[in-house]
Image 1 (cartoon, rainbow, N blue to C red):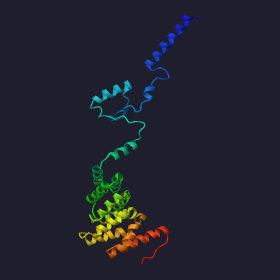
Image 2 (cartoon, rainbow, N blue to C red):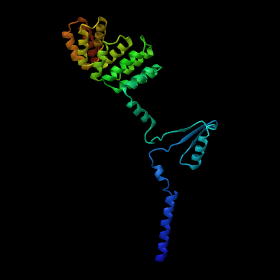
Image 3 (cartoon, rainbow, N blue to C red):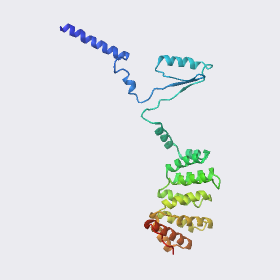
Length: 274
């Protein structure tokens, strides 16, 4: 093969390759679009005949959409769906949106809920945000949004929602709430949570609240009941001190009941009360 013929063949290959890239020929055509991280935006047209989906990248359907969309008598409205990343599932987007909601928005959602199931979902989100602010927000929301007495479903919602609290600071906020509410269902939910999560500092706080001169007798009874129900071994040292040093006989008795239940819980055998 002469050198002239080889040069001509090489030039032909170069020209063919350039034309192929320009007009989308060959196996590499469209690779840029296939590698995009977002789906193309689709246009949905709603008419009396049904829904028609068109792709703006398609000249035929795009032109039809613009023409038909301009005729208000023939079609109602053109709906645009924003691009959605193919690497981000809808559930992850929803969870991110919930995480970005602040406590006031979550409280409004709880108060606007029309069923116990919806209330439970919002209450769980409030508790999941964590901290003393979440405890106070949930208690205030429950106090404002619910009637007393509640239905069994609403009471169960409270018990389940408050299970989301577990830190020492949250236990302190829950203990404080016992002197601020007369809602029986709310008190039961708080006491159940304290039974699982109270620490020694929580016991000491309950005793201080009980001993305050301004605490009414009914609230003292609730605080003593909360101590009696404690089943967290982390509170055992404060309970033992309470039994030895309590100025109120009912508090000493509450501490004895809690310690006996903890011992029975550890050994699996019932412990007789003195």
